[in-house]
Image 1 (cartoon, rainbow, N blue to C red):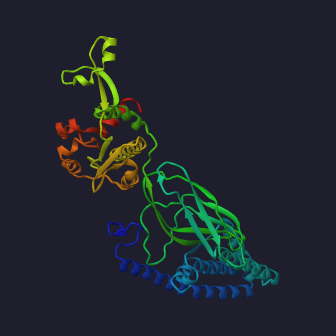
Image 2 (cartoon, rainbow, N blue to C red):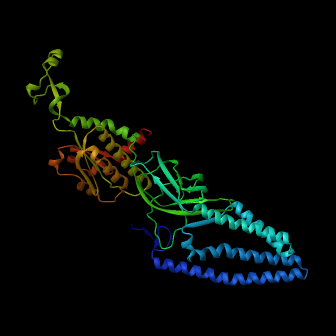
Image 3 (cartoon, one colour):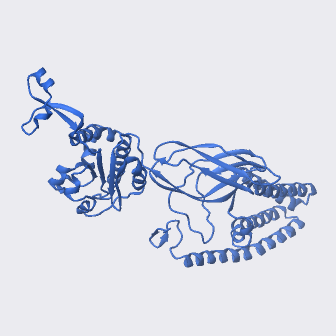
Length: 469
């Protein structure tokens, strides 16, 4: 899949050239490494110097020097060691694991720092024992949270067809594959992660599928839970989930540890087909035009109207004529099936925000019309730039048409590009044709306007604004 490049950089912020990106990351790692080599000996020297000061009775100076030494060591541990560890084989032992200290964890570390300073300055054995217990708590927290996140498998089941703006129920299945131990206090995160494995590109730039967090308090060993999740996709288009992220703060809440579970899932969200105000405005006139086109000669009575000189005498309705004392004839529906061809013109005059909103409205209107004609059981064909569905029952081409509308993008093609979507005039008379376009009405030939029903989106939007819609 292609990756977009903007101003010499990838969409995710890394340089467009992977070799330059890796070289830059390597230089940053070496800088951190040499900074650690300088900081750690300095911290050791300051610690020894603080010990000498305390033995000579300069306790305040010793406390200040010892605090600075501890702060320097903590900066190396927090800022340098994790980055270097991720570039070693430890990354294969802890795949896709992120961690961050919570507010409680920060308070806990501050308490450890205070007790460390007090223990170093006083040499009190009780303080050293307390300090050991506090450090053991961090170790236990890290090991237990790691165990909780191991052996988890996650699946997301979605309906076959998804529509923009329409809420639906998805089923999330989280399975614990560990043989003996349960998983406690696990959260499936809906927000995307910030960390990405080295050398791996994202699945796509599409937004994520899961957009909310799901909390699971307890998951027994060798079992699974399947909570139902209510999701809504605000816009049409493609949505992708490169990986699911599960996190836990178990057992003490000092550290939030997060692990990524590969997914590689993409879904296509179709345009909304619920009747909109714009659809309800154009439907009466469109239905009237379609009914006029369907008048013809058949066995199914359509209407009774006044006699015209061109009408055949065998279609005179003598009962109606005698009742009103005026010649009346019967009209019949066409012998062939109801046939309609929809054309969606993706041309837009510019890329302003208002124009793009109007384009999205036209896509929604086209989808609503396609769904309406599907429900009426009409035979339909469809054409747009790069796609054409032949004349067939609307139910056979409905979802391919909606899938194309889900991905269609505005095009700055010349106004004459509309001609590529239209058949020749002889074939055009075989069905009723509806054309949705942003073209200005004066740019469309008069003959084409007489033989087709045009929905000029600029005129529709202007009429809606005038009506206060």
